Image 1 (cartoon, rainbow, N blue to C red):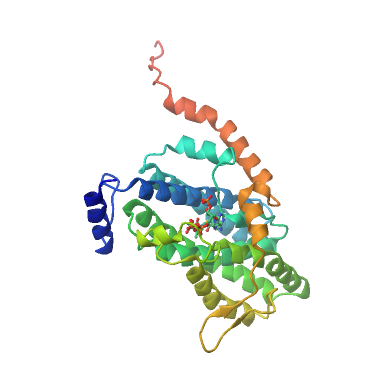
Image 2 (image 1 turned 90 degrees about the vertical axis):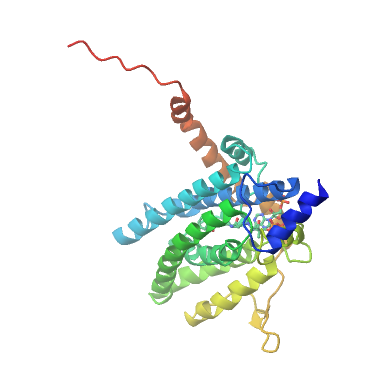
Length: 310
Ligand code: BYC
């Protein structure tokens, strides 16, 4: 890599300038960004599945409408992100192939089943909340197309968050059965939620370079802490509990303390061996096969229109 170009590139990043697709960039910046944006796009498209299965079963017409719109937004986010990743040179078809062959990763959290309506409510409120913490930070980052996509995504996610919060409040303040169903969802989803922000900074492989080049604007631990700070009080306020007896805010440091989640489980899940990985990819594979004719038709040379004889 040309050291002068690299120094210029880093100076631009230090000045807070945006890097655009046609600008010079180090190979590693391109590679890391492609990896991260692609994984993010896959997370959106796979993330539509656990909630998507609840559209037909959502309680009442208003909830159905709202959930359908939310899921549609998530798929739209995937499209925005695939477009942002494509500006770095990797074709969309190749990204999809890598997803369905299990080569690319996507967020751990979507490999768990949404058994009940309360699970779907947990995702809409808290997974979206976690995503916003991470995405608001990264939308101030260095790569123009990714930042612009994130800005729009965050605006939409903030509606999801309000919808999800409303759903959780409804169950948490409802009948005994509803409250129990909501509590069980919290018990099930808390560990994957703690995993969602990635491994601790001490062992995160990519954080150092990504933060130096302002792709990641907050570290994994910073995002996790911010999420706990913003949402644990709101969860407790609803009379719900979290399945970690060590969870508390240290009054002196202002830091949240918690039991380390099981990182072996995290590794298994992100490497393809979680409760729903096979099912999630199978659904994407079927969608890819069923949609093949549409792509072929779009790519085929236009057939000449012959006017019918009068
Ligand atoms: N899940 O060095 P590290 C949504 C992997 S969707 C799976 O810390 P990095 C929504 C990591 O890839 C929004 N894998 O990595 C949608 C790496 O493996 P490789 C999802 C994870 O990149 C529908 C290894 O572990 N948000 O909100 O510096 C409905 C080492 O980690 C995870 C995004 O995608 C994980 N959680 O930091 C509802 C945000 N964590 O690639 C809601 C964009 C780590 O070396 N991504 N790994 O094989 C990021 O900000 C960063 O990539 C991460 C990880 C913070 C996730």
